[in-house]
Length: 379
Image (cartoon, rainbow, N blue to C red; front, side, top):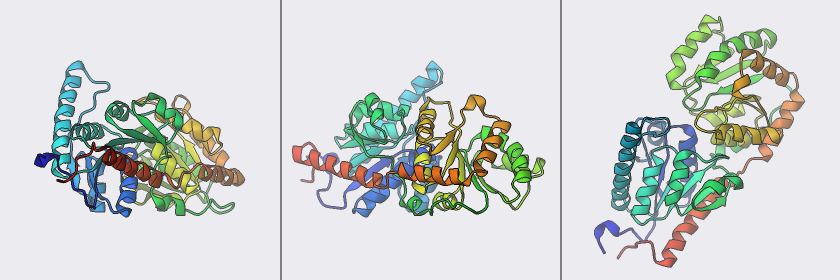
């Protein structure tokens, strides 16, 4: 058997998890990676050296495998061809890496860097899987599912569009979110504003006018606003121009300890990425959701599911402005029993065992391939 085709039979087993570009793609990889590591696996992360995954991998002591990738959606024909060429080169590079690093399993969690990793794993003859927490699958995972042995999803309906077998597991969330105490029926108004890991320019531009009114009408309110690294200076300047340089307001480019941030507030204003919503549910927090409508309708679908369960309020983009957002927040903070009830409903929707369920499926997949004799083993 050729050297490139040998993987070790003995532990530790090795997994390559690939995802990047946003927290919604990286945090599922980290949650699943934590569970696999707890079971004795050695975990590597693949993604872009310029993405959020590079910093998060370094903080956790994970080795980052660089896999260049380019978006295709909304690009010209020439740009799409260039992106396809990059994807093919990255897939071949991923195949070499999988063999050289003696990887037993490749898992893609979305984002453009995940697709070539899954293809490379398939070309190397290794078990491959994807994790798709959104109600509507993302484009990278939708395409990569053609090369995957299985997909872990949060919603049964998601599987209809995927091209592989599907396991309904829930969305993987870091365990610390489940430690948040329940929302109190009394106390001060405490608000967390999230625009996703990259921030939201639209939310950032609306918030100064919203908070100017809230600070007048709710003297006890405190606000923590994650605005995104690229928007930090402009957001701080906008608040200063509105006269909102207040100890009751804290602006951060990115929150490293999101479990603690959610545990400290009574209400979350947020975009509606699937992992953010899973974290909100795990923390048992009521939410006012402002879904992003670009890149498909998956955020709208995600938010609608929570709104239908009375765990969140939904304001769609076409009706979102400062007046509407202010009115929604004042109404919610005026009704503490409603906040408590929404928080309880949110927590009832959480899936605390999702990461473990995904790890169970992944380990079973590897063992299935070994038993069938289709996974290369050490000579």
